[in-house]
Length: 481
Image 1: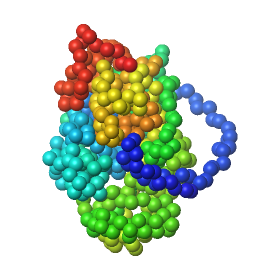
Image 2: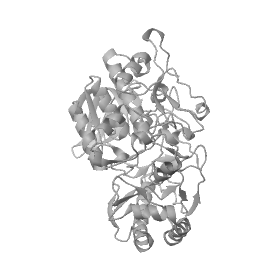
Image 3: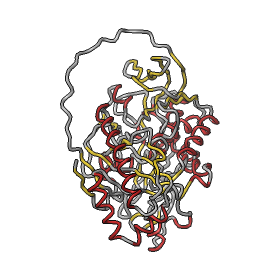
Image 4: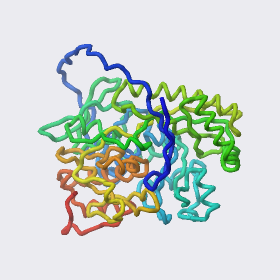
């Protein structure tokens, strides 16, 4: 297995070594088939809007749809909400401000941060957002909250507090939560999604709904329903890699940051020694506490998030890397002398699997434009100060042909370059909230999701606190493009 460092660029503010797999498994043998007998599937629940997946986008979708008055259920395979932002230990939340310091990831995201306990969030004060003061930017750059010399609102959070808060918001709004349930197949009638079959300890059951929101992250439902999707990647980017993150406790991150900032030659020697000793090797991130270190790598490429054997291989390599890191850091890293393994993520860190082919898309060619698309349902910060904010169209959530379903989260319609930021947690909150509101409007107005009135959707999103630049009257509405 080899590694290649990625250099910073205008299109990549996050850099990391990428560790390419060196082994190639033998082709899986053909072991024959077993024909599953037909059976009647009990209907477990009926609702207006069914959200499948309780990650950032699914939680936002359920909260938004319920706020609009829809009868909502959420199906989640784990025992918690938040997905990679909690169970995946991706507790560093990417930028929610633009390069001038203005918040553009708002709505559900702002509600979460307004309600999280103060001790559960670490990041720059609001007055520092957008600061280009060299000393301030240097301080926050070490804490993953400044890039290209600009301080951003990119906090770290306590995952357990976010799990609890996410649950309570949905329960307050009357969402029916169904945990420990793995969605298996969409229910299709004449090419329209009418519900989902899931597996659980009770066996195979179904939830029927007027609109289904695919928030699985991998596009499992729209793919199995026959919707078109893409899976091409930018092989030079970290955003297609996988790994299992972890936390070390008992550390002194301030000592580590002082070492990294003031002894650059020793730091470089330490990192090189780690690569030689461990093979897979990465540096720690700060967390919401000084005594906890976060490891979001080492990032491994060449594995498929849709292959159970390859997912298993990534888990095994990640856990071996975790043990090797602990030994190396305890022996040689300032601030890590008393480190111990606090937690490894119960959810593997998948960054890419499938991307919907929608009636619209987020495209690299449009980055320089800074134009609000007519069907804008959210805004993403530009990837660097070179680029303006990016408009997210409703069409990116709507399948080209499949009806009865919306997509949100990291599998929305976009090209490989744009996927680098569209997969991030803040953008998942944005697309999830839009999907939830759109689903509720489709139900209340008894129209297909592709026929939702864009002006009404934008007005409802604005009422929920979403940042939008495009809003039109219902009599002059555009179609998703």
